[in-house]
Image (cartoon, rainbow, N blue to C red; front, side, top):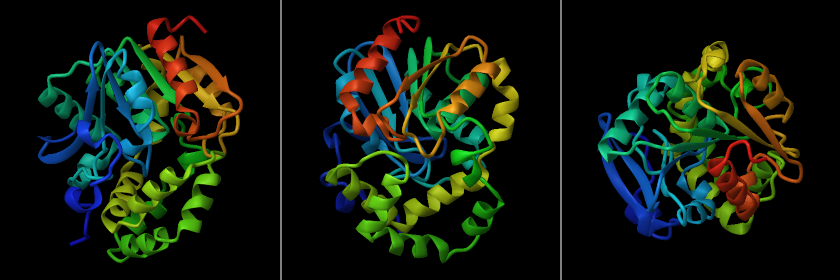
Length: 292
């Protein structure tokens, strides 16, 4: 069995640990962070990340909102469920089950990269009905950027039991982690590098990442985007090397009524690079989506 991250061993200094809890829903255990008071804001991190990605932004939002973040299935300290749960629709269903277990009805939702596509799917499937959906460098289209990684190759890699351990050994190389993060167009601080290294140095986390990649379907999402009724605001980083900013304008043609806001000085991990700037922007958008 692939060893997964252990909370008592690997999570002793996890960001915002005091707000962490473990919740059973959809047949497996989730790592959830809950903080603040007020209308509920649901946060969904991107492929390969975890709650640590919101470590600075979430407490800022929590001054105004109840913030719910979680490690997505197979990521971080959340269990890896059966393969059907790792598809976009399966993950949307599972996250909906988690929200019911928490008795939470999100007023707003914010997703980064692949997390944005998951939240769009949840809106389309009527599992959540937020007033506003904010996509941070969202990976919503099957061509270019992150979309190219969700391929038959991922299915092949996921089926080879030695691959997660091989990738985890590579993840132990700090220089490799630094280069990976720089390739997104973002600058990571020392804490971010250490946390990503801890994640990608664990074979269980890598297995979850590969499982998500192998089961993701962005073509179906692209087909259904014209049906999206939730107000969508796409925040793009002008220096994003992972999901080109141009994709947001393509999505705007598909999702009627959606808007694009560009942060020209930031990359794919904008919310980690400049959490105060992004938090201020999100709060303005949630207060009044037409304000900017």
